[in-house]
Image 1: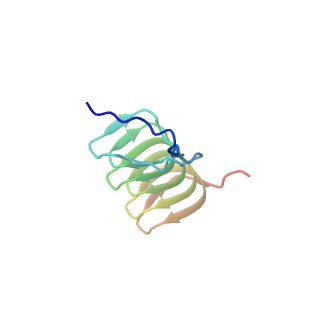
Image 2: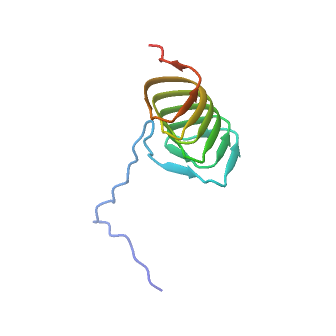
Image 3: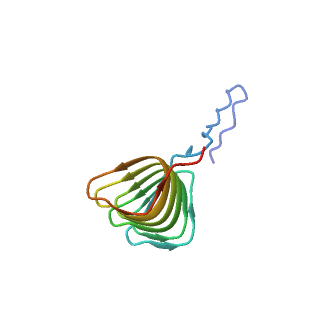
Length: 128
């Protein structure tokens, strides 16, 4: 009944470009407290873990919430731990909040540890 024809003199609409590169989609995924994942989690954005992950995580950023638990290897630019982490960590910066319980070998350039955080493992500097 109604139709609209394209105006041949109208300027084309510009396409929206998305940034590219690590962390460029800047999305943040929140894995809820009732969620338990067994397997690999991989994203170019950030992940907030409120539940439990048994497996490896590769992300631009990782936050383990106070009730969260991760068992496995973690590779990320930044990692913040408020809950439990058991495994290996490779990151640029690591922040351990006062409620953190970490059993891991950690390779990082920078670290912040709040009073009360519990740590069992080794800290290594990245090669190079």
